[in-house]
Image (cartoon, rainbow, N blue to C red; front, side, top):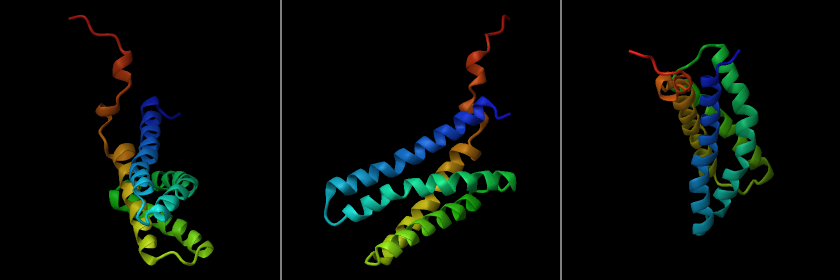
Length: 136
């Protein structure tokens, strides 16, 4: 059985992964200047990140690989696979988009690692809120 603390930790990490890339995506979309394609591709990265990222997290947990660089490599691979797929459909994409999205996948995987794996339990301890205070 998965503890409530662990469930909240994973949920918070997934929400952070939705919000963090959304900010630069919105800035690129609003700012214009040729960044619309990058903003568009950022939006297309969400579904593969969840479809491939959640099983990758389960695999890393099962193998007990809990180091930041292991998550970074997993995110990098997901980012490269995602943009590689879109490059087959849109061959006019520049190589810099390929590298940026791959690197962004790795950095977002580190963010997920920090929240889901590395943070101490005391920061997200929900059980402390539900226990009555002790009488001294």
